[in-house]
Image (cartoon, rainbow, N blue to C red; front, side):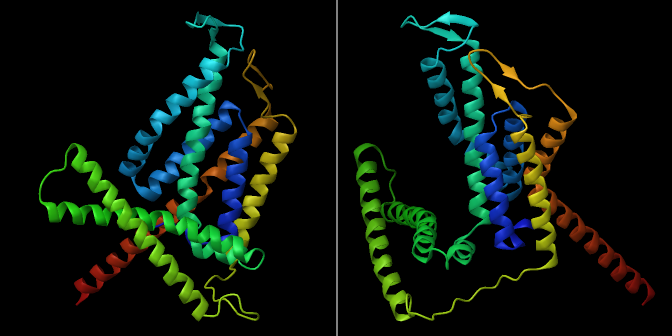
Length: 305
């Protein structure tokens, strides 16, 4: 199954990323946190697979536990005291709830950034901001591209060293091998930067009147998707401005009452976060149905002949 949403216009992809990231960082209501976290995990699992998502979550787990523990250790606001720390400060239930909310927010944002990296590649980023801020867009696109390329080259160097040595690495020998691999990768990166600069200069980068080639065309589906995202974003923003997502964790939990207006705003937020996954699943289902129909037609023709 492919990602249908990544085939849309870069402006549609960027608008969805900006809206989801903005609302995820600003809306601390537990329902909003649950929606953002579940939608991000589902979409990341669809893009990278369940195993890759599980490995990523295992890497994030120590960071999340540290964030929750530090908040509970340094934030002592709250009226429900559970126990007292060795320093004499109280450990409150409200501080634990707030730390859990911050951990969920951090996990949602990190997972969303992993999805954004798949949606907005360097070519889309340069297409969107190449004319408004050419230097900044080029710098950011090269930086985003450099990190995965450097990591891949470093793994290649490490595998080559292991193949040449033929012996398992332990202790100090492993550290020396890692330092040599990192030095070789850095040298490759510097040489590649010089080659890239020479190539850009030879192709006329920075000259006046230079045109840029792009493969993106605005279609009817992009117009419909843009309108849908704006409607969902307006619904969430209206609920946010109206206090539907008001929630306070400390010193005591206080929140706005559940109303039809807040339910509609939460539904709009859920629809906004699940839009890429819904489009991709619908496209995959449509493709499967077309394949089945095509196979049935072929079988019928074979029977007739």
